[in-house]
Length: 396
Ligand SMILES: *Cc1c(COP(=O)(O)O)cnc(C)c1O
Image (cartoon, rainbow, N blue to C red; front, side):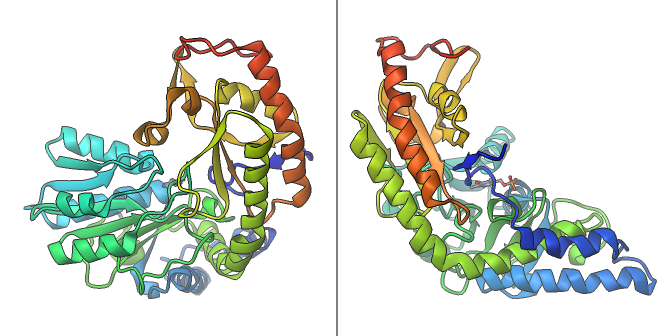
């Protein structure tokens, strides 16, 4: 496994060794329960407080506005459900067609139980139309939930402008900011969202830990009900190692922001330009400028993403496809479908997501090996009219 070329950082990231180091004392020595009456448990409370300050620092929030959760999914769920519970008279939700399943599937269930939902579309570049947002928000809109950056294309959404609309119309705004954290600056002073979700494992922290920012003054109704932890806002004994790790990861993320925007961006651009230039029938999915510095989603026409990934795997290259071959039919991702990417391209879409651990050499290897992989697949499996059927796996 020492030759892995990891370009799937939007799925999960390597834990920074400094994060691991920070977590060890609370695993090995300070294992007490912060709710205990004795001093040994009480010691642990200061670790939580320090971590809360660091998480708040990354988004310029106040520490008491941060609630620790089990990850991005729980934060997304808790924000939306709190908005509905705290405003029972409002029964309308606005979101987009390209959200993470943590939002999409929650909202689908809410719709089935009687809430009304407006799902905003995106254009061919994957961008939202602000006028459509304005039209969608009604007097009975409880919450608008929009991601800060899309996980598949990296495309950024105009949350500052959306916040102006939700404020004017009296709706709450939730930002799923899981993908933007540590890649571009995001300040809740500058962008006045009411709720914001972030996740540890997407920014070189541990899995199973995340945070929800709730703006001071916004009513919060807990989703996980139990003890008085997190000031009664999230029950359950705290995940202390996770919390400490998330705090350190946020502190490091702030320190690495410049690098993401310069070195990582340059590597991403070199990879993207090289692939588009050296392979015919390729195109970029998503807006070229308005996106995260680490992500590129490239469509290789007439081949299947799953087959590309299998051949890349032989070189240790880890990326992700924009489709999943399940139950015998290839369904392009909901994001690429919402963008109207033609199906001959959508099926062959690969997302490369880089990180501060990505090296020049790794980019060179991907640039060297990919043209041959695509050529091989195009020879083996020339484009057929019926591309909606899964082709047999080439090396199976
Ligand atoms: C990964 C991700 C999530 C879910 O976070 P988990 O911590 O894995 O639950 C939510 N939203 C976006 C945009 C993501 O990329």
